[in-house]
Image (cartoon, rainbow, N blue to C red):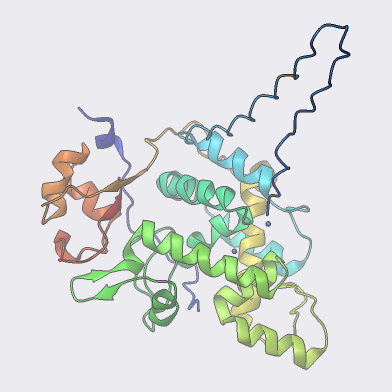
Length: 321
């Protein structure tokens, strides 16, 4: 039996506050120049020193495949302090951790997708806290449709999605593709980094409320401080302040579970998700599943962008499996 048949089911989970959402440079050193010394006429001929070996390309780390790897990876990248003081933040920690067994089960179910997103965030040098956005938005449900029209595990509205190249047409909604939606969401967050100098809390508020609303609030208050706890900048909705508080709360729970009576599924193992090109000629996900070593039901559940599992002509053909 293929290992991919072991993919855990992503059951429909509670929406923890489904929101309407609305990306640093390496300088290469100069090429080394070998200096050749000219030997005296009566001496032995000098030889040019050997050029230093070319630097090795960094080796991509092995994909995370256990809960311990995912939680430790995220905790190592969260901004300090992880557990932020304040009654508002504490209230959200209590709310998420109120049913420890249920929280652990939910976390285990989302591990494969969260590992995929965490790796993409690290590759693009974006804050690890953003791996928690799909929990706040949809509990990592690729098929989620929110009030007012946002869709997918990142809950993107159509205009934002189209602005980042997502295809939305009859038979296909790229917001429901974990591959397309994650790429577009990180593109959007990367763009927000330019507006807000990489300050992840301001970027998160802008993801929720729109960058121009946050910029207007900064201008009106003459203050660029950001805090969900202190409701900064002034003039935003409670939902937007809560958005940052939820991310703070989740980061604290994952990094310091023992403080809140939680036992995370560190021993849980899973088959890492990877991107695959759909086989040429495949007209349905059921048909493609045979070539990808998985089953049709799993492929459809992970990739609901293809309505009823049918692959329309001209749509993107990259899936997660």
